[in-house]
Image 1 (cartoon, rainbow, N blue to C red):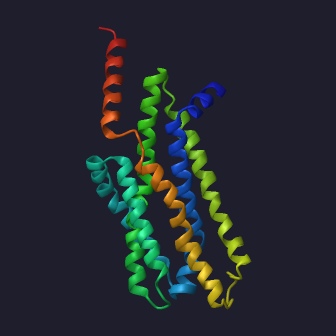
Image 2 (image 1 turned 45 degrees about the horizontal axis):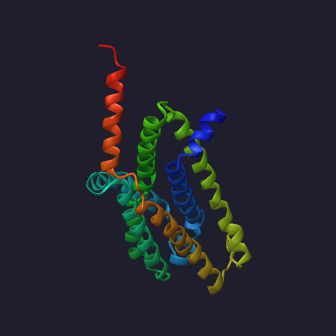
Length: 234
C-alpha cells in the first residue's frame, strides 16, 4: 500500500487533477451550503425545492453536450469552459436584486447545466492519468487512484461547512425569522457567488494548461495496446 501511494504521489498529473477536484468541489460545496439561504433572503424565493429539481435535470441533460465538446476540444478544455460559464453566471447572479425571480431561475438552470461537467470530466481526466501510470509502471492501479481521488473529493465537500460560521462572523443569521441587514445580505451574496469564482480561477489555470492532451493520450493507448499484444499468447 505504501509503495502504491508513493508511486501515485510521484505522479505529478495525479496531484494536479486532485487539486482541480479539490478546488471545484470545495468551491461548489462552499456555495451549496448557503444556496437555500441566498434564494430565500436575497432573491426572495419562498419555495425553492422545484429549482433544485430543474438544476439536476439540466445537469444530467447537458452531460452529452459536454462529452461532445470534450471530443472536439479535449476534456480539459471542456471542463475549463464549464468553469468559465459557471463563473460568469455566478457574477450575473451577484448583481440580482430581491424579486428578480425569472432571471435567477434562468441563471440557476444554466449553472445546473454545468453540474454534469464537474461530476464527469475530472474523472475522465483521471482515467487518462491512470493510463499514463500503467504505461510507465506496468502495473494496474486503477482502483487505488479512484479510491484516493474519491477520498479527497469527500474531504473537499467538508469545506462547505466553513461558509455559515464565516457568515455568522459577518453578522448573518440563518435562524428562522431572523432579520438580516444589507451588510449581512451582501456577504451572503459574496459567499454564494464571489468566493467560488475566485477559487475557480486557480482550477481554470490548472485545467487550461493540462498537458495530457487527446493526442498524447491516443499515443499512450496505442502503446498499451501494443504491450497487451506482446503479452498475449499466440
